[in-house]
Length: 95
Length: 464
Image (cartoon, rainbow over all chains, first blue to last red; front, top):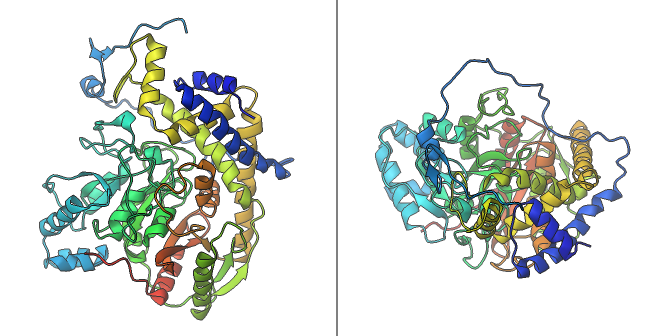
């Protein structure tokens, strides 16, 4: 049901590199799982509203008051390549 | 000191409060037990007692709870070495109540799994049989409590990740109502389903730990004030209560497990409860809906692991190549599978057919429970279709592994609470009995579970 090309397309969307072996395995596994998932179509869902949130809750607002946020040096402390008070990353390509 | 091992957490708290055991003695005793754990339950154990020890025994905390300065990797290599700059609200609440953090427990990576075999840091052994899994994803918490290597623990449940390991290890596990416990500082898997709850030796311990976990938190806008103080259970009888049984006719249910569950239904009746079969017509589609909703939400939540702000980075090309290589190297097989399924289900042209449909199934399942609770007070089921399976037995077949959650998935889809308590043995391994109720009925569920627990008199695995 899911072929190699679809696996590679979805992997690109997910920013996930897969090895050749993973691509082949993933095609089979995704097909099996999606086949089971599609059994939900046996239910008559005509006119049923989707559930996005299980408990009844209206918009939750808070007072608009300024408060301290995480200090910059703490936020940068765990970064693999912090530089000049920011997160340094490789140059964006054209991919 | 060794008699602490024989006591429940509530009994220990009484000794501490009476001054018979100092908080420091209790902490050091449990630190020693955790340090000596050889099941793989822990990923980190506290090196020393904090200065401000309170009157509750320390608590083992699933790895995915952020604890300031303490390794918190959610069982994933992509967060290896990460020490958060803040602490989860649930853990802070327990600390304020007097329970210090004993250690971080092993888990399936990002809570995705039913066997703990998807941990990036190695599996956990079931203390009943070391060649078997403890269940998952909160496998380390369940194994540690069962083996007497933690007095009590917290975990998280998205599709059964507290109740199923509790069942497989012979301990009590409670999945609360969605919103009862703050999710702030819990490393997210599926945000519309994830809930934190206790894994304990008995029902009373679960009630006490749960009492200290609940509450509205400004940092989690989906959290709600719990409507009452959580009561410690006292019921001796179940007169007048109606229990609706679901799922005993399912073909995947192991006959030995079914026998133990049927005997438990007999005990409910002996205690004065009424037992009747009920239908939840849409619940058998729970797994199908769950394996769209949970991976879809996970694929969005896990987008943040990209080698920029925390965790290891790999790849030597441009920015995209760095993202893709970092995620390739950092995520395990199951996490990759779920990211792929979730991304596919949310991608253009498929969203309505998968995510939209699954959300409608979710409505139907919630309606099924609503209808059931007009007839009965509780819905009861086996927690897991089988006892603990062998390590490696299901790793090659993801769908078979997913079906382990058959009885536990419908409740989080409906947002309702459920507890698993040990109800006997099949083939020498524990069987769990699940009791679910309407939203915010935890006190009533725990009260019923308590009466049943006393009638069953389950003996845990010998603690040595």
